[in-house]
Image 1 (cartoon, rainbow, N blue to C red):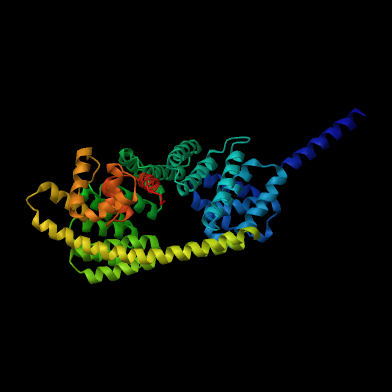
Image 2 (spheres, one colour):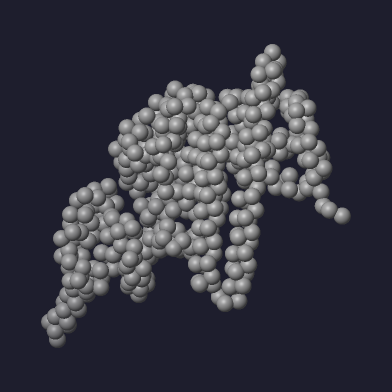
Length: 487
């Protein structure tokens, strides 16, 4: 009897062992791929993964195979079937309550919602789920580093730049804990981007240098991007240093339109119109309307500087066309969203289409009008400049209005602000009178912004006044509130 009991116990333990050892050779290889990819050995991991035939995998193997494939090759490679792959793995790991693998599934679902649908609220939702799962049983630093990476993108959309900095700090912490040098490299890069967005330029130089120390682990385009940011940091204060960094970026990516645009701006600032026009020509076929507008704006400045006003006007028409393209793209997204919207909301979407149409027409008419006024005022300012070379302050103010003065308004005291307003009032009393008629009394800063808005684009105003984009729109909001209501 005793021997029978021992036999039964032995068989029982053998069965338990068999159940816990249900790892096929293929699954063991997949676990090796997981480990290699977490320690920056992507090439070795890809070689092992390429030996596997997807159609021969068991459900357990396929669930892991799906997420490892996405991790190594990225979502664009499988965009046509990405939802199927992720839904399969999600269903399998839910049945096992496997929090670690579910965290990675939701990370990639967030990625897909951000880049390819796009559904930004859904992206934030999936990233939150991913973070919860990544800390549920044992903290997965490798995944958390990537989650905080994607969270920065979501916060960038909503203008939450301080949150971006916070996420970059968390990404750095978890990247270091994970031991992945690639993750640490991109944490350094994203810290630079976050600080740039948050306008914390005092810390940028050191952080850029820190990111460049990881250059062996960054893609070419990312390294080129860092050199561009480095150049932009010194564009106005140390142009030669800026040029050196732009040239380094160009050596890495000779056809980079981003770098060519930066060099065009730099050469224009230095008065080398030919070089500026040459670089504008190289990047003039940019696919993105927003970038195209920036390039064409530089080209308009070049034509004005060489007194080719007719050509400048033609380019300005192209700028209007590109801005119309942006509005049309918004309109298309509204229509697309209407298809996905409950029926009772479709009427609101239709109303939005009419609003966009009206705004488009108004924008086109107002832009043409402003363009004509812009050139007239430019010509007047140049005439005044010739007559007043003996007055340094007046010459300085003219330079500010023309956009050829390197200095900005960051160090102006209240007296300097009032002197500038007085100067402009003397030259263009009708403009000041119109502002004072339409608005309650404005502070000197808000009045200056309104003056600059007569001839400058938002980015030019931000540069001249040395203010951030968020401050610019905050000032606009205050100006709007000061508008007098009609009785």
